[in-house]
Image 1: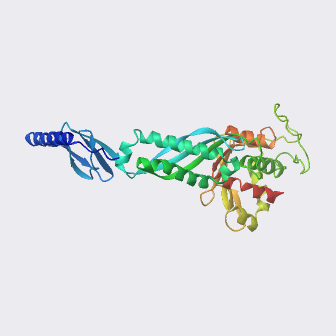
Image 2 (image 1 turned 180 degrees about the vertical axis):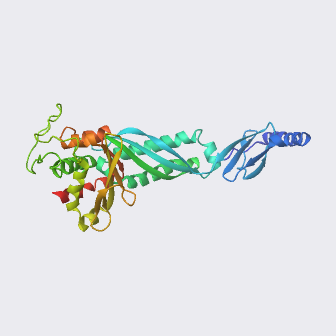
Image 3 (image 1 turned 135 degrees about the horizontal axis):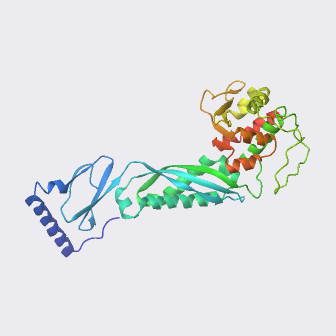
Length: 355
């Protein structure tokens, strides 16, 4: 933002005062040198205002400031990052979710960053939050969960359209869906993460492990089961569990016969299940569907898992007895899913293989 041209009286006064400043600097040298000489590192630029008028950016290296008539502001050119705190947003299909974002940016024009915006960090944060809100209001929950990278790229372009005029460029935006606080009013086509988790618990833990649950068989595919939304569901008769029964081991036994190369090519992901025992220790299991026919076993997988599912053994038993709803466990944090939500929803293919 260039300054307006000076009139000749103003220009004359400006030159005279600058000359007196230089003269004072010479008279009091070298004492004044400790205050007038500033060192600017390579990753910074110094914006100097002489008698209120901006000069060209100074640095890197040593910069001379005239006493009493020069003021300055340092501008850091390194990449910085901030996070947009999770906030409640409503999607197009009526779902309420908690969404945040991580943003990385850098200053490419020090003069614009100082002259156009007073609080650059706050202005960029508000711009990112507004762009995120507008983008998510136009999309259903399933699209938000499945296309986070695409939405992040769109947010990057929209934010840069605003911030380039401030001398700032956003390098990266990463959308983070913290939790789904309320499911969509109109169920979208295809499985969502919540429905996948619900089927996972009812099929893996209710149907595939009927022997573990005391021999209780799950409802057939054509059976309609009515559940009260007010009263807690009553456990099925015969679904009592002995505290010493190896619940997670039964999960492994149910998964083993379903592994195949076709399932590996369809899913292509690695899952880790952390079961927290009453003693406080963790019993870890894995389902590796990345190579061969797939593997399932006890312990940590060889590589980094794409999704980690974690819950307490008591909650696992409650799911088997139908005393705890899978969706309620996920929403309350008793069933935790860490990793890519799109990969987590690929568990639907494992469910179909068990049918």
